[in-house]
Amino acid sequence: MKRNAAIPTPEREASHLHLASHGARSFSPSLSHKNVGDDDKYDFYLLVRNILLVTRGSTGANGGGLRRLTLASRVSVFVWDSLSGKQRQTCNARSGNAVLCCRLSPDASIVAGGLSNYSVQLWSVCTGSLLSVYKGHTGWVYSLDFSPDGNRLVSASDDETVMIWNASSDEESQSPSLKRDFGVHYSPTGTVTVAAPDSRNRLLVLCGNEGEVICQTEKEQSRIRSCAVSHDGSTVAYGCEDGTLKLLRLAGCAIVRTEELVGHTATVRCCVFSSDDDMLVTCAEDHTLRVWSLDKGSCVICEGHQDVVWRCRLFHENSRVLSCSHDGSIRVWDVATGREVLCCAAHTEWVLCCDLSPDEKTMVSASVDRSVKLWSATTGKLLRSFTGHSDCVRSCAFSPCGRYIASGDDQGFVFLWDIHTGLLNVLSRHNSWVTDVHLSPGGNVIVSASDSVKFWRKDGELLQTFHVRGSFVKYVAPSADFSKFVTVDSAGILYVLERI
Image (cartoon, one colour):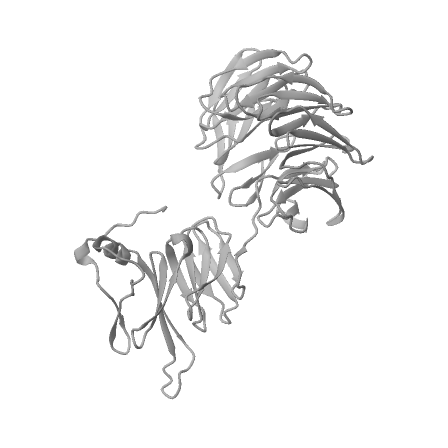
């Protein structure tokens, strides 16, 4: 529960609820389905909320109409006949979540409830059975209302959103929201193209600062876990949990062709296009990397890792690729043959991130073992070990000038390192894991992703905190000149930020 309510004393609790209509009547819910002790009785009445009287229809000569009273309390919604005081139905929330509000449909056949698990549930007034579950909000649902014809239901939540649902649906439905594994393309004119999966396992391509959806795929059988946009913006690659890997060929606002690349047998964790867009490199939980020649249709397999391959980075000349794995190593591969060129037994725990210096002479790795290490990309020799993090290091990146490295840990700290002298500064701090970091072209500004997006000076000064609506973000993608930034939060909201 997010909020605490003042608890009244038992002496001030009412034993019944009273309605002054056609004479005073007493409505007391039946709790025969559960043994309730004295403490629970007080708790029950304390949590009574959202009492609603609905008058609909005609019952004959007296014209009294059909009257129903609904009451949301704790984990149930109770429905009474307001004239007789007889309880007509008890509707219980799924999984025992608190019902925060309720609303009857215009014909009094359906009762809707807003729940503490952020869902909206619909029950039959006649049978009390659950009809539908609507998911999409990321906060408590506090208000509901039906359209006059009963075909639409509107819900409002403390996530600051209002959603409209098809109330005639008799199945579980979910408002589509974006997932955090996205890819971005910045055009030379500044136009932003984002490829991101949604909660229905479709890939959406969105364009412009408003995030307009220009096209989308059909639903995949498993969740999409990685995607990338080619450098010319004409192709999108995405990989799924079941090993499915597909290419979308785009023309304007349409998908003109879809191609499936068959080979991976487990979750595809990363997709990277070569600088000329002729090649795609992917890595997966099947312990392999695959190099796909997009013009020839051939595939080279890089085998040698003993565990999940988490990330990969192509060298600029497109002849080698760097990878990091849960087996504790980073490796360099020849993309033409799949041969292992270098193997650095880098860490004692999973390696979660790696990066290449701009001159491609050095490599950096970050690990669960709380260390950051600098390696020669020519010999594989360990050049320097950076220590100081007190928790798992989840992100690392070189500055475009090559002199600095930023790394983020699970305590919320960002460390800035000089590759020659060691620790330069500690940037404090986020309230959760730092999942991504980037440095500006001159290395003077750092952006970090966590429970918020923060911008820092190299000297440790916090320049700005951008608070997202969700609880955290996974990645932030800056443009090359650090003028625009794209991210998707845990609430499924896309943000395009512009530096002013």
